[in-house]
Length: 142
Image 1 (tube, rainbow, N blue to C red):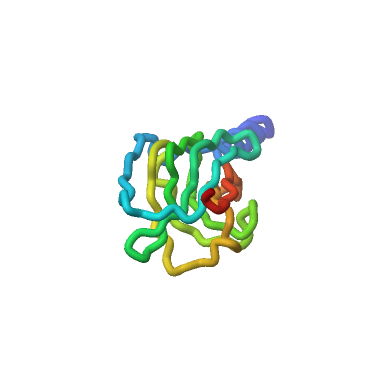
Image 2: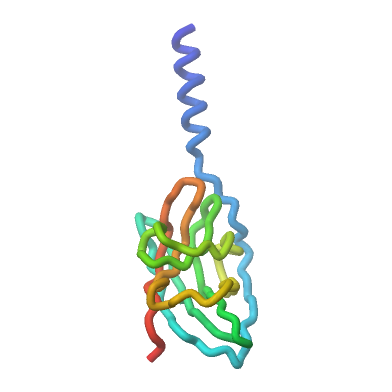
């Protein structure tokens, strides 16, 4: 009887820790206004064994700011979100919403006009497990 309870508890623990992969994987090709001005740009790097690549760009179009993930790719995970952050870790950030896809070009509207000298990181973060997938340090366009 004790062995059955022990086995049941082990099964429950391992099944509850299973990493779900619920972010869409179909490549996106969202369009960007050809007259948009690129303000800052950076390259993604994976963190903690995660694979994240592509570019992050803050653009201005018609007086509105957006974050563009260009040629973006990441491995999948649950509850992935896109942040603008003051640090390379998700401590002081603006949540731009759920990651739309693990691949492709995607555009996220930025409400207001944050100071991009302070909000200088784009992050991909799993909210469910508080796990950082990748970051891009945003710098001036040369």
